Amino acid sequence: MVAARQLDTTIYPESDHMGEGELQQLIDESLRPELARFLASLHRVAHVGSNTFVYYRQFDSSKRIAPDIYVLPNVAQTSIARSWKLWELPAPPSFALEVVSLDVDKDYVEAPDIHGRIGTKELVVFDPECGSDRERVLWQVFRPTRGGTFRLVERTDADRVRCRELGAFLRVVGAGATLRVRVATGPRGDSLFPTEAETERAEKERERAEKERERAEKERERAARLALEAELEGLRGELSRLRAGRARPGR
View 1 (tube, rainbow, N blue to C red):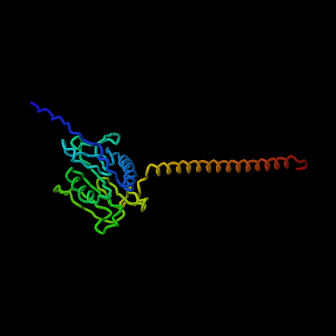
View 2 (spheres, rainbow, N blue to C red):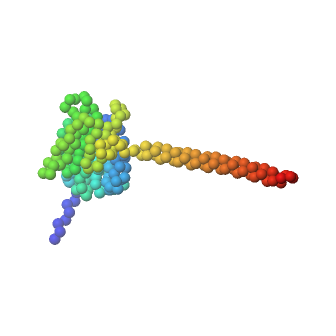
View 3 (spheres, rainbow, N blue to C red):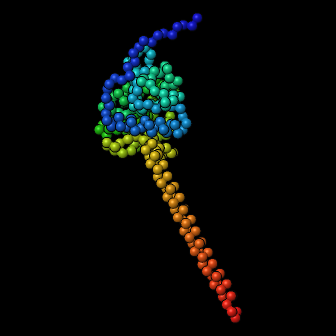
């Protein structure tokens, strides 16, 4: 006899109403759609979200985390959820990014511990204000070892880090209030993956260049046609003169 599934009457809140720093929010808002477009360009089925609760223990609403950016493999980008429940997902997050805010310990200590316990494949901790403390660093990358231990595998102040699970780099651009995190490709992450706005500008520029090319081609064709007509007109005149000369008396 199959045991009846336990009824889950737990209330899983959608938000804790805790605010985040404006810079952190701007980084999240710019990176999420760019990362979603990048994964879509690779034809990977994945949901890229931001600041949504992920509950990782059923019947216990206190066991949750809200990554600044997360990637859920095999979940369509069009899927919308007010919160995610790990036991209902096909797999844990394949990637997560935590942007360090005022609560430094949350991102430096608590986040790696939780991501390790829930099975996140790769965690990147980005600290845009690391210059304020020698012990802080711009990037930290965590991955599970073969033995299953989630550990720090890279710690650097370089402007970029390679993200194995994304198949790309994350790279810092700008400074101060304009600082952002971008997806970068290539062997060393030298090429920034274009944002939607950049793609639209490039397409408009391509269309403008194509129209200019077509206009120039038509102008060349017109000039060639006029030159040919002038040459033909000259030949006709020369032929008329020759005919007139042959027709003169005494010749």
